[in-house]
Amino acid sequence: MTNIAFLAAVALTASATFAGAADQVAPVTGTGTAKFVGAKGEDVGKADLSTTPSGVLINVEIKGLPASQWVAFHVHETGSCDAASHHESAGGHFNPDGKEHGYQAANGPHAGDMPNQYVGSDGVLRAQVINDAVTLDKGETGIVGRALMVHAKPDDYKTQPSGAAGDRLACGVIE
Ligand SMILES: [Cu+2]
Image (cartoon, rainbow, N blue to C red; front, side):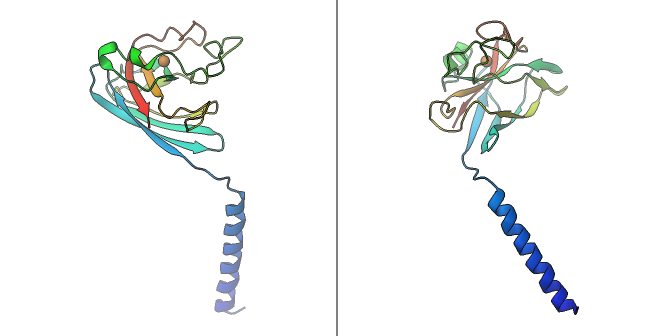
């Protein structure tokens, strides 16, 4: 085989492989962002959200949190982050199915429940979380226009209605 014929064969194989791979990738659409407001109303970070075939992927980075500890991370039902109200403006957990709170609850969890996340020694929470109970839209399971919340304490996954997670330290409206 000459070099040119060999290269042509490689190119043909490569394009066939590419076309095959493209056919197998499910359509992935929908992205979102959330800018987080701290306990005093200050900017503390953001999340980038994207739709995947496995759920909504949430890539988050928030500073100024209590260092070296686990904290609760939820979707709350109302897209309002008012530091003056200690972010109570965001309401309770997003719970479109009327379930109990927590992974340990017999009739749980809320769609907005997510695993606790760990804050680094620098007070920054960096995490990537998949939530397969919600969608990135305004439908029945949609979280656009709702709020992401980080609490002062970890979620115990069983106390009703919010896992004894303590104060609301950072809140971000999903847009
Ligand atoms: Cu919460």
